[in-house]
Structures are given as C-alpha cells and as structure tokens.
Image (spheres, rainbow, N blue to C red):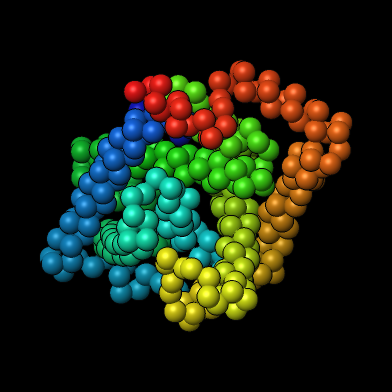
Length: 358
C-alpha cells in the first residue's frame, strides 16, 4: 500500500508501522461509533478479499488447464520434524483465524442454536476450499523459494501474471487486512465485554456507550493491546507468542467442556457434538502447545510470561477489589472517572437507552 510512495527503495519500517497505527485507530473509532457501520465495513472488505482470491484462483485454474503446473509436482520437501510441523501449523492456522470468533458474538445472532452451527459449517468449509485453491494457484506461478522469501505472496503472483495491472493486488491485500482487523476488533471487544459481565475483568469493560450503544471500553483496551504489539516488527514472533497462548487456552476450554459432559450429563446443551470430535481436537491442541516448547523455548516461554502477567492484574483489580476496602475504593474511583470520560453505563440500563434513542 505504501510502495508507490517509495518507488526507488523498500518502504521504511516506520512508514509501515504508521500506516498500521492509523488503520487501527480508524477502525477502533468505527467500532465505537456504530455496530451497523462496523458490519458494513466488514461486508465491503470481505467482498474485496473474496474478489482477490477469486481472481487468483481463476488465474491458477487457467494455467493448470494450459498445462502450466509450475511447482505443484515438486513444491514440498520431504524433510520434517514434529516440532517443525507444530510451528508450521501456527503460521497456517493464523491465516484461518476467526473460526472461533462466532462464539464471541453469539448474543448478536438470531436463533443461535440453528444459525451458529450453520455459520461454522458453511464458513469454515468455504474458507478452506478457497484457501486451498488459492495456494494451488500460487504454486503454478511462484516457486517455493520465492514464496518463502516474499512478504506478500499474492503480490508476487500478481507481478508475474498481471503486468501493468499488478498494482491491483496490493490494494486487495490491504483491503483484506483491513477487513480482517475490523472483524477481530468487533469480536475481541465482545469477549472482553462478556468477561467483565461474568466478573472476570474490571467492571468498566462491561459497560456500553450511552449514545452509540457500543462496548467502548473493551474496544479501547483492544486498541491499546494492539498498539503494544508494534514494539516488534517480526510478525512470526508475534504469531508464535499468540498461538502458544491461544491453543493452550483452547485446550483448557475443551478439557472443561469434557469435564462438564462427565459431571453434568443431563445439563441442557442446545449445541451438542459427538465426543470423538472434542477428544481428537484436544489432542491436537496440546500437540500445538507443547511441541513448540521444545522447538522455540524462548518464544513459547515469553508467551507464557505474557499469559501469567494477567494473574496479578486479576487479583488486584477483580478478586481483591471485593475484599480490600482500599483496593475497592481505588477501583471505584477509577471506574467512575472512566465512566464520566468515556460516557458509558452498565448494560442493565441498555433497554432504557434504546427506548430513549428511538
């Protein structure tokens, strides 16, 4: 996106970070301003992403029909290790990020018992087919060495195939990234919001804006955490940090679900699947968690430190605030101050706000 501004050299890292920060702040504002506006942005950029992938897939299929298979016959090495496979899964599964986000916004769905499983089945199947076909198309044009060294494989593909129109692919890649970030902002904020309502986060993160009816404090927290990630420019380090924590907690969540199936077999379960699926998934989660500890102990260990750092924050601002009067007073003072500054209230007043706004 910034390459046209630097035609004679590689764009400096500071320019890339500045563009990313501007996009992050803009999307935070959009999500704070209106849920409908955020969803409209998501629809537009998802369409742009699918259009780019469709263009790549059609080009690849045409080349295959012409007999141009490129590196498809020998594009994969037969050298592998168990730890290497787990780290490769980190990068691969990162591109499928969002498969679990529907659970965070189930309150936004109509008839979630029907529509949530349907959306998961259709969404994951569609994304899998599209991504696999896109990678097949890449191998018909781009060599494995170029694929490993390229910061954006789709751009390298376009430079080979589209000539003077190659500029369109960086635009599509930028729009795709923009839409992906918007989806993450929307869903992660709801995760913090529900966590606060359940008592796992400070009360302020369970409040909504008095006029826009959006979870402004969780969105601000998401933005602040994302800004901290600009401390490093190595995306693969961030992926390893995040993926270790993500799959550890996904595995723990699956263990909790299996425990409830054993301890409370008669509990009402609107959505239920055969036990073989969570058991197999649990084994894969712990493979993805523990093998990187052997392959990349420093990165996995630092990810674990980031995870553990939330423990003292939980005890100070959540657990002890209900028992220690001093901590409770400080917490209430901070909460009230942030309420006034951000114009937010607890969700039990949401219905009243909706009636007043209509």
